[in-house]
Amino acid sequence: MGKLIIDGGNRIGGEVRVGGAKNSVLPILAATVLNGGINVVHDIPKLLDVDIMEKILTALGCSVKRENGTIVVDSKDLTEHEIPEELVRQMRSSIIFLGAMLSRFGKVKVSYPGGCEIGPRPIDLHLKSLREMGAKIEEKHGFLNCEATKLRGCDIQLDFPSVGATENIMLAGVFAEGTTIIRNAAREPEIIDLENFLNAMGARVSGAGTATIRVEGVEKLYDVEHNIIPDRIVASTYLVATAITKGEIVLKNVIHEHLQSILYKLRESGCIIQTYNHSLKLIAPKKIKAIESIRTLPYPGYPTDMQAQMMTLMTLSDGITIITENIFENRYKHANELVRMGANIKVDGRIAVVKGVPKLSGATVMAHDLRGGAALILAGLAAEGSTIIENIKHIERGYENIDGILSLLGAKIKKM
Image (cartoon, rainbow, N blue to C red; front, side, top):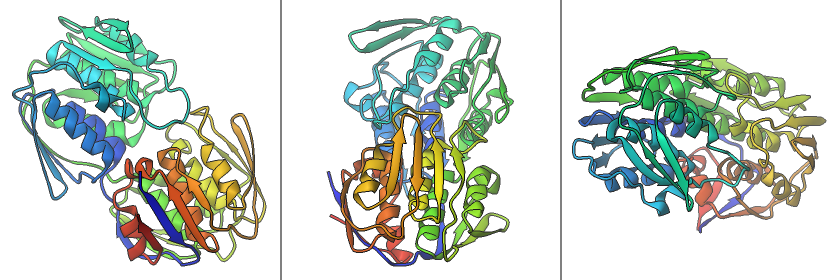
């Protein structure tokens, strides 16, 4: 399972380039099955989730070559419609193949997806929307058997701006008859990146980044080359690592607009942040100020994927912070682990009350999910003594070489 050992107390400082966004790479890799041709995608991070996507594409009959941060997918010889169950159960994002495979192949069989244990993440919005477009979906023995002779464009109103459902509908709508309109669509930057990728191969998608997206069906797609946007969550995690260790960092390859909700909270905590063209600099305060309230919301609100990391920062603040988790029901598993390190955190349902303490102490803790695992790394960086983080496979799903990068930035961290 692997573990990380961190000797805390060292300042994070220096310069780091932010790589491609995991949450952009995964749907875009699923979209490569659409064109029946060559897809060249740059700035691919080395992540376990990307490895799983590569295996899924290969299992479907695609040719996949990956080298130096670039992946080339040839989907011309797509032959299979069943996605191996053992791969689907490792990664929730595999469900994004529903829309892509129905659009290209007319059928797909997939098991219910797995992923992090952060509470129920139902796919009912995905299935309801695809059924509205004409797909026949049979749920049997933990599998979804989906078929569609021809998908039809329609007007879809999402009950919640689900990122995955929005992406699945976009992919399904590419070859659908007529126009598909998605209302109350997710507005995340990764949705815009998917739109740009699809349009580059000849699709007709508009409105990504707003609450209404239009997909006009086309008959043919073409070869494509695309650069993935930088990962806003990875960037933000390194910013918090710097803040919690009272360091100074320069991040390169960032899009400031994607980070606004996080930068606002970091400034509230006392950090000095200077922005340049595609980079930014953070100078940590001598004492972290408590942030009165943090509420996770769909983009452009504060991201649930940065809730755990900011909670860790607040454990060493000068007051009380109230965190409200509005996206997932069970995303506080890291809180108990932080308490083992000396944090003062009380959780009641979706509310967590964090009272700052003078110091954290090293302990043996367990990563239960991706972002919670990252939060424990941040705690270990600031803690007195040695911290051992177990079950780091979750962390490796979303952070490329995080131990190596932090080492270069001044941390004492090693993987065992």
